[in-house]
Every structure is written in structure tokens, then in C-alpha cells.
Length: 89
Image 1 (cartoon, rainbow, N blue to C red):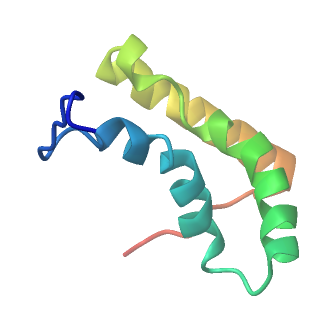
Image 2: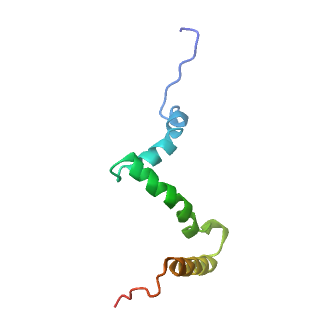
């Protein structure tokens, strides 16, 4: 096609490559499991729990983040029945 402008340089393919990123993230998460079924079972439960432990840090000050994290872990310990935490000496 002589009348069409052909452009090729390093950054032109980035949009196509980035569209595959969510797929690659899922593949990376699944590589530690023995089967896709076991991965799906774990990730289905984990996806419900993990956001609880990741407050939106960019919306709060460091002191607020530490306080919020402490509260969330205390609630989790109560829910799971953990009464004492191991101490490091």
C-alpha cells in the first residue's frame, strides 16, 4: 500500500499491549495454584476480604491511615477469634 503512511517506532504498540494487562495480572496471580479451580475458589473469597485491609491511603493523612489500619485489624482479630498476638522479643 504505497499511498498509506506507515509509522513504526517504539511507543506505537503500547495501547495494544496495555489492553492485555488485566489478563497478565490474573495469570500472575494464578501461577502459584495447582489448578484454575483452586485459584478461583481462593480468589473469590480473597477478593471480598482484601479491600478491607487496604484503606484508600491517598485520601488520608499518615496518622489517620495508621489509626484506621489498627482499628480494622482489631475488628478482624475479633471476628476470627484471635485474642492475643505473638510478641517479638
